[in-house]
Length: 537
Image 1 (cartoon, helix red, strand yellow):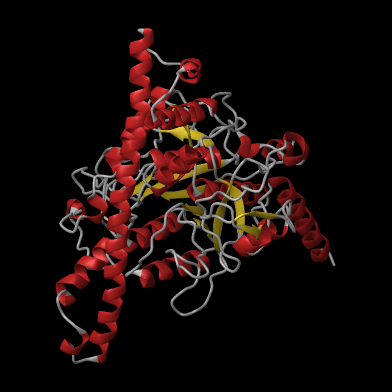
Image 2 (image 1 turned 90 degrees about the vertical axis):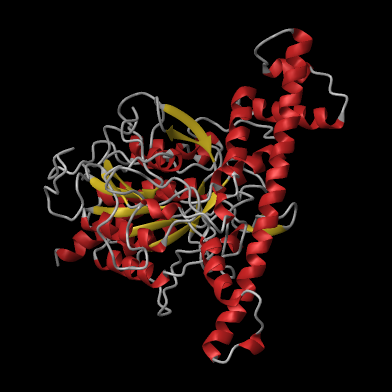
């Protein structure tokens, strides 16, 4: 996956100067009690679920990898009881050797892993360029080639646009970094100090325009709770990630895996390293869903009785359809009943394989929660893959698309980067400044994106499935959507991707609602009671 969640959300926060700090653990809070659009997790456990029994369920996190040794995750990781760790034998004979906490479809049997990959756009552009570059339609004889040539022209324009935007974004980030570091260096020199505080930044008399910009950004981030050294570190990481590899036509990191990539039906490749070399994204997602609620440290996830299965299939770049299809099937076959899919892309040459995997999950009663994407697009019009519309025109009954919500209860409630769609996006959920687990030495950080909103919904769905295991994916989706709170019914908000264009919040999704665990549990309880009463007659 491209680091669009991190980059887009960071730029949004920088541009907005982040004048306020989000409430701690806000996505678990209650709108009425805490004046923030959380999902009422704490209220639900204390009022509706106290003393109730639940069933342990498995949630598959299809992502960049999960740090399964993190202090807040190690006790809630799925462990394959039929596999003996490190013996190099496929003990359970499922085709995957030493799959202890999940599987990695982006590595090889020698333990080497793919970290960066290019965009699917780059791969499509490269394949068509070899065939059509320098040609015109009159050079082609068959209708098939002429049709593909027209497609190539669209791809060419898209690639060139993406390349130009990437170069402009890199320039912008470098300017921001130089502005902030310039201010920090001047303060250190003037005051003869090693550590610059928020008070130091506020007191700095910025005279030059670049210093004024740098100060505004640093003060905004400091007010939001981010130390200036951490800000510079994140800016450096962002710049480093913009190394051009995603659009590099000569990049071929996939060769590390050693599979027959052209064989879309190949299943048994990869390795058991389900953390991988860059597990920030997947670890953050896992913490939102189920970071331990019983250890009194770090953060609390939403679900209290689940096990997280890590299936690594998302690089820094675009995921491969073959890997996504296999990741879905692996998770389903090994017991996961809910899959979180916080990834997406603009092209999908292997869509049929993914569609078949989605239908397979549907046949096995597995719910798929998918992030709507972070391009501020109307995905009724601009498709982001994987999508719930299958090649046969049908819509599966087990697939949800999730938009991202800000914690600020005002006209900017819809995250400015969030995709939306009256026909496609099912519901909105908290997705800005979400504090959760990140890899190595038990760290925690904020991150923003529909990638964070999707696991909020996956967590709520997991609580429903855990306490009411008889619920089907179709029933869970019905509960989540019908019980969603309509706080912004009839109210206008700033349309994602615009500065001040107003649109009714109800136009951004099917429901016009915000996911809420408290209301979902009440509806589920009523649904189950009605079923019990009917079964007695």
